[in-house]
Length: 497
Image 1 (cartoon, rainbow, N blue to C red):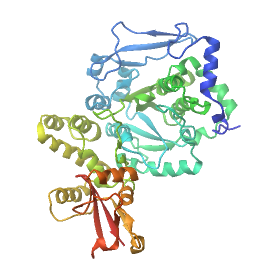
Image 2 (cartoon, one colour):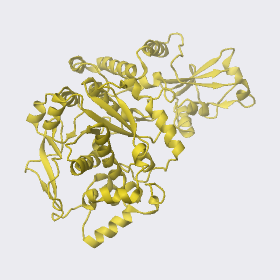
Image 3 (cartoon, one colour):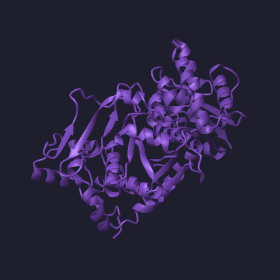
Image 4 (cartoon, rainbow, N blue to C red):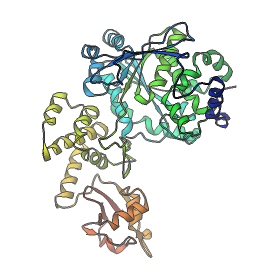
């Protein structure tokens, strides 16, 4: 019997865990010291890439040997890093947690190229800016002389990562996963160099090994390597249980499959380092432990902080929707504008994380005050956009911006665009609110009506005052394009075919 997601959703991990806890008198919020021993100095603080942290070691007393050190980021250790990759992670703000960082530093220094991987589940047909931090880590890894492995989660996408979710992810079909895999795969070629050389990137799919596993064989060989006690300590599990949100047995298995991925990648490609966001820390540690127990391998895990904007909102989402990386889902102009609209508080941090502008130049930009900070925002927008879409698009974007906002003749190349025909405009015409939605200048019809009511919607230079206003053939007045504007900095084109 091969592993399958079918049937597993019928079992509630929440119910099973609570029954287990009731029998063992174990709680999810206060682990009993009889199950684990946590060693920590009296001055221990949460992980901090700038001040350093104390070493924390967890020991499972049911095991004959202690687990590896979970994170070591003492200030003197960070200051003494020698490998190019770890120094870049430290200096540009990527480094959050790392296992055995001194040993990893020596591996990266003396054993190039080191193979490291980062996973991306195929849950949508494009990645968005929220994934860009992880892609940049892989890019820095390769530029430091090591081999990045892009792991596409074709197999784990059949399960769904419960991390940070209050409810189960939508179950995806095989066709959905394949379409999404095709969609997200192409962006990596923009940031990484793929090939057969020692330092060339490679892309693999965990469906190649996960879908062929036999359930009972897998349980017998690897099930004993995971304890419920340890799995209950994971933040993703505790959050779901504390909120009494449904948590299926299918999702509960995700952390085991992610750990097994690390073991499989070590066996196949000698990958010794897993990279990821700090919300994946528990799953990544399980992978290092599985490699040690099954292969006697010294594996490492390194996380970057979860990036939020200064206002507390998630990176990659705006009022207008997700900031997609695929050009067919978001225009080069809109992508540029996203970075140009960065807040004053975020611009220097984002320059370090999302561009390759040298730190010395960023330090000079950091000295800018008042309206001069806009110069740093333009550098951020230019460099981030050039990295994804190529530098050739910048001239057109700059011309469009200059003409749009300084009253010169209209230039519409680079703006998001939709097409209508004369037959579309017959009769009562086409509602402008719908066109704002089609151009993604509004997130819903209600949002479009609110934009019009607030005086922020224009057709050309004319303010739209009627929420029920329509576009007719007469509005084109012999032209083939009409520009719709949402506020001062967002616009799109309706082109007559």
